Length: 404
Ligand SMILES: [Zn+2]
Image (cartoon, rainbow, N blue to C red; front, side):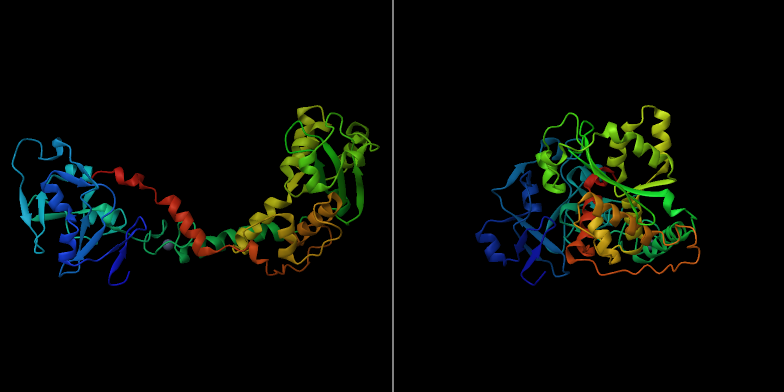
């Protein structure tokens, strides 16, 4: 805000005009309009200042509407009661209820709604003790920063909490997360399998066209293309994984591979994938019964979920959580081409080990220092921007329905 313009909540900038300019443009104040039973439509177009610094808004008479007659007077045909402010502005007495129908509230009420008054009063009422209570227009009031939902003292920083409460909450979450990640699980690395499937698409009717399995020792257990039974082409996903119909025409079918896959799965304690839910929803069909599928589900772990939890607790600056992002975050080099089934499987295995440094037998005393690497700029959160967006969502106008 400089001396000659102010920015309204809508983002519109309006100029401060001199009396004679206001008159030559025939701009009118709300009070003048009200006397003609007119109400402004939309934003004011100019303003002037009172000696006390409060604002008088001026409206374009071409953009007004008639005030409904039921709002002209209180409830009966009583004549309007008016008072003149020091600025010369004439304001009308009205009930608090009627004022609320215009969007006029007391300064206290606006404060409760997190608004600060900037314009001079637009109406008034009497308190029980006959003292004057001024009413202000919410449309021209300034939105205040919202307070922390926990302490209600400080301005919000993230997740509706002030910086202090947010840091406290994060410290608790981080401690819980670290306990989970740093536990000694005593797993046998040969009984922990990492797997990755490539599919013709993401839907239920889509088919598996490759499977890669690596164990906790980073030994490649299976890596094969699979010939689908129904699908003849998959143009869209072909671009991602590079598997063409020609490449799979001599590959075994899933049915042919099922006994081997079942045997591997049965001898595993955990089955881990990066974004496991899609993989699970397709691989479960190698089993016929619900009980078998549930048994499989119990062994399944999601590396992506664990990475999301980790960055949430330790790297709130990191915005994306793809496998490529996870590799970058831990500074792990790729073996092979990202998005190829086998490279993704090794990658998942390595990310998991960074997340759970004491996962395997004999690692009870392994170092817990998880090195963190700068992430590419595209993957950084811009706190101010995101918080604003978050607050935008929160500051819906629904609370305004509450009457005084
Ligand atoms: Zn707080």
